[in-house]
Length: 374
Image (cartoon, rainbow, N blue to C red; front, side):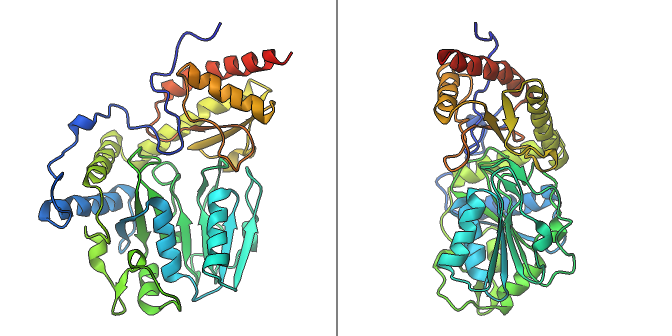
């Protein structure tokens, strides 16, 4: 017999992720809908998205935040195309998205002075090989591998290069060393469960200096341009946007930020993700047929938790299908380029009692599939 208790919310997708507890779309402030994003009401909402983000994350003085097109991908591409090329580049990757940045830098930007350091899924490259006089490009948390950077100790505080950090599945769930990060990007649909299509770009004063002092020898599309006449377009960081944003998505994001503040800020959201991971860790420790893809607990993600089973890839698909058919867990199959397994989103919007309720169902589904081949 399968377990009787189901997760109240079976949404464990790694993006778009579950909405915050108690979310009700009808309770959003919809006064901006139908209004221009350049009207006072629209600009104020966008300005709040930037300033509230900086306040809640506790960004250092002088750091700027902007809403940009095309999700985390757009924010990363915008930064790389605008700023890379002045110095040699060190790229680190250990999963598909980081590998994508390495490919873009070497094959699209065609930067010759590029070094690539990689590792298999579930592991990290050797950070000791990095030269902090170079620009550094890396993901803080490997969304498709479940392996994260444990800290930023490997980044020199007196570095000459800039650090470009894709933090889309880390920010708001993991402690970020902002003083070590010059360019940070993320999207609303991850840890905060927001809507897709918009990216967030955080720049340090050093990144702004690069933008104003370096002009890359390549054409830049309009949506990548952050300077005019050699000066930063400051309006981008106070509510103006390069293209027309969805104001419905903006107020949805503001709702998520208000929720973060209401529960105690980033400390609370980190604690929620940590608790979810701890629940799965306790379950894995008690069963020998399931393991973490990232076996080293120090680098194990508390958001995109990736697991392997002692089943064939086809059998793993059967487990995923069985859980979906019983409306227990949606969208928990491993990323298409990752080793076969499960990927359970454990970010701050996921309630721990739903993770607890899911664990017995994992065991039931595993044994149900295993029994079919005996």
